[in-house]
Image 1 (cartoon, rainbow, N blue to C red):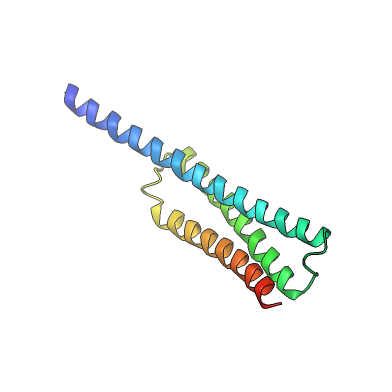
Image 2: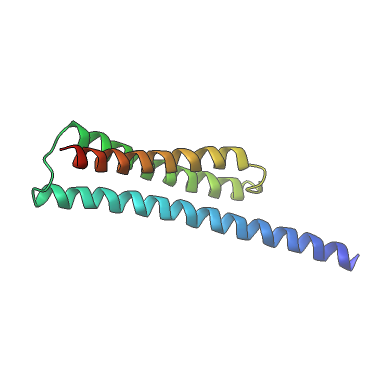
Length: 118
């Protein structure tokens, strides 16, 4: 019986670590998106970049990245409070993670492409 409890505790500890790592990952995605928006604003203020449709699209994509990462963090916390593990909710977490990373990378790439092409 002692060995069975040890296995359950180890599995529970792995789930807690996985949840903490996913939460930190989404926190870093949100921070990176917000920092990218801040960098664009600074470049606009010092007149390195002019305000155009490309800048609006980039900022919208970066803002959606921040919003998606915040929603993913909320979803993760709600699943944990509802006694569901991140492993049970892994499909939704994976979709949110990929959407967040996609909007972040396309937003930065679109902005950098508009700078290079002008």
